Image (cartoon, rainbow, N blue to C red; front, side, top):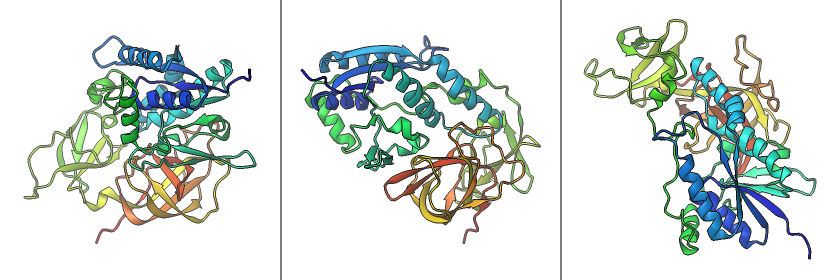
Length: 384
């Protein structure tokens, strides 16, 4: 009897990875589930759901008829993801740990573990697609369900990481996923999707961060230097933030809310403006460094592409070109697979609150090319 190809599936206890495993089993693969525990510092408190998620994953594996193994990557996560998360916040940036979790844990530590289990393939419940050509190169493509596409979070994967990857949900919609789960009696079919940063869960973000970073209060000022309040520490705020400023009241009769527009690290001052459409919240040009290209090499530059500076934003047309590396540029986030080149995306339309530490992710139609870390010196827009 011929050996069936083995797929090791990362199962989180959610409906997406549950249906991914079910689909692969239906396609005739030898499916093995792996539940990854990536955080254990406070897994006994009210905000950690890892025990509940493991129980759900085990129930799904039982219904599907596959083996499930639980593995602990907490040490790897703390070293490769969480340490960088804290370093970025301490420096006034706003990191996206889900991107590093994919490149360092789900498609590195997990991949290594899967290969030790004699896996031919690995799979996750991400909404994305892959395309393999005759030369063996693998491209990362957007999912069919544009509202759920997760290529933004996968843009730092390498060719060796993508080559064995399967994304069973890339060609179907979220509505279809839940319908399959309900029809097949998969117990997670109605489970609510997880939101936010995985290790923070539903807990107040500021309370969590305060356990690791000191509070260093300072002034909240307008762009012209008027003191309008106090902040608890620059690390606790991000560009475009509206809630939690504690300013209160209105200024100059303007009945618009306040937004974070910048950080003056030298003066420990938070800069706030009134109104979602204030010009200081927009940028026509966004600089990025620590570039990573999925194909292994940069695309044609200069060139016309589309880009996202935030996960939920629509693609925005831009011209991408290399620029001279500016003095003082922050390369603390560079990884082994990142390029030292510094690029600038000049957008056709101003972009709202591009945030240092987040990612500029580039696309050529449906193909995700890669991306880099947004730097602090984007050019402001001139709003008409």
